[in-house]
Length: 202
Image (cartoon, rainbow, N blue to C red; front, side, top):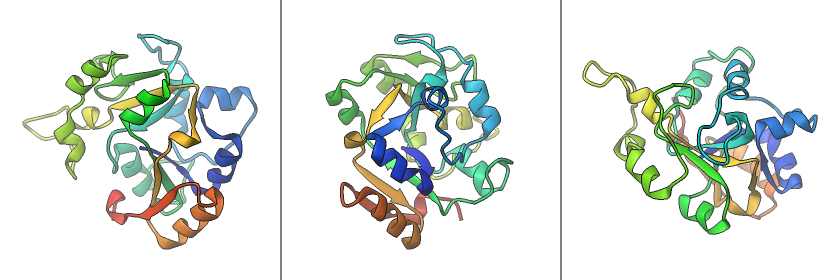
């Protein structure tokens, strides 16, 4: 699940897919930013330790679950450079099988890529082993007295190198009917748009 502002959908559709942050910056494209800019800056310098290597900013990021810690920060108004809340945010949803069939270059992690202990892999079998799938299905991901690593693990990612084609996006999810209408006008029937407020905080 990759989330972006609905304001970016028309540009994404016109370009045929999602470009990595470093690619966008190199091309002088300035999308509506909804993430923490300090985090994005760090990701442009974080090394990817497995092939095809580079830095994290060279990849299009996907989470394995909704209601991420980053979305929580947005909900709480803790991202200084983005203060429009959750309603304009659209999930672009795909699947591991779709990525595999398309032959896309990717790297997966068992948690937050900013943490040194986080494992990185380019092997499907290993990815299935290291991602905490029960935690991905849980509604709450906060650290507890018995498990102080839950938040890091909830931030496990699939990173797709450079570009993610639009035809690999299976459907969109939004919080409100109003945003659904805006999203539908951008994708022009090329994919379904679902309203699922439970994927957001309230």
